Image (cartoon, rainbow, N blue to C red; front, top):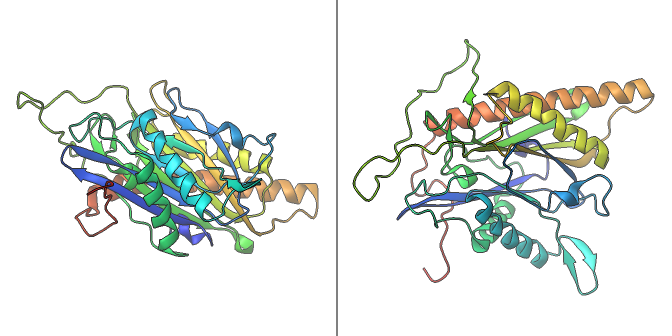
Length: 327
């Protein structure tokens, strides 16, 4: 399906709220139990949660869910909801009496794009996105465009809509590398001349209290990526794969990794397919091949997010809607 869900066991759930001055959402990537994870943060203005837990030198090497959210640092509250859902399912690091789910998260800046600067994701939204990911089933199609964490995304300071994009690449030996991206970048997308081009229509923001179109936000951006592979990787190899993904980000967006972007790449390895490690040279070739594919998958997912936001309908009924408690 040319999607991150081509990797067996990877599920994606979106929840968003649009209208009544809301324009934001949450995306949860739910891997199978035992998935190894890591992260590489290179943007100058990141909003993240529990990323230190993914360092290869820490106690726990596995990840129970990854939360991508709108709402800037406020939206990181949605990770608590996803964590509670995982606890209910018994997903997490076992401790006396319960489990502690490892749920890293990262946020884009979309505050006020629906009209209310205080309309941002909360724990209930994260819980629902995690539940939606689980309910989607294996190898489900990923809804793309202005959904989930990409609901209020824009690119190049409003020159294009941003949004959710995804891709996958299959290598010899049955190794699959997929990526999902939330594109909300300061930089402009870099399309090859022969490929499809976005329409470059501007995102029309809501009018201010005086009926005027407000100036577009300056310097408030971020691109978030999750790479997933069915290969067997240890935590250090997963970290290197996340690092390699930033090359794809740099190829797709110009400029990238700016002081005003929070660019963050997660990597997940489900461990279903072994790499050739028969010799040291074979091990190096296998990892370089996989990590090169990861960079390309990231590039394609980012460009897919821009194109999908231009073309994919997000009309009511196309995706699960967020229902606040009591409504």
